Length: 222
Image (cartoon, rainbow, N blue to C red):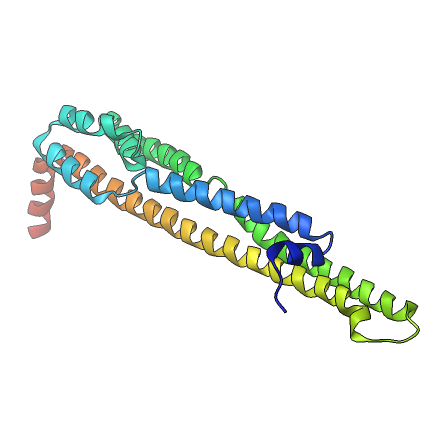
């Protein structure tokens, strides 16, 4: 015997309605995050290569011209533009400005992921609640029947099993999507940290007093 989705939904009982809402929410959030992360190019290597050339040549104006058109679709460009704009303020202030900007970008990338976590936890609990409700209905039917047969308890068992299955499916989808999106954001955060560290070193390196370095080496040799 096979059932359509509508029949399964009906057999699942009243708890199928919140599960339906949870499934719509999970799909909507997952699609929105996938489109958002895909729209905002999170690559950093190409940006770093161009900026390293500009910094070594001392051409910060060209670096700004390169980054400015990219800020709408490139999160990395927004962060690195902040770095270039603060390049004359000292290493600590550069790091602080970049950290603030990077935190804002990462928060926007992670928006909605906490809802996926919550839905991944609530959905199976709702399914188990439907399971308890179905088993209560099955035992009530047994108690009220003069003779016990499979058909008497079938509806309650259907409700118990169907809500559990749907709750677990929703939770699995939510957690898989959350894991994928979190991995993408974590990789972007690591790339930003490494890129900014390399560029800050490159920016501050020419400011090191070479004479002082030679003097330190001279004293060390003696």
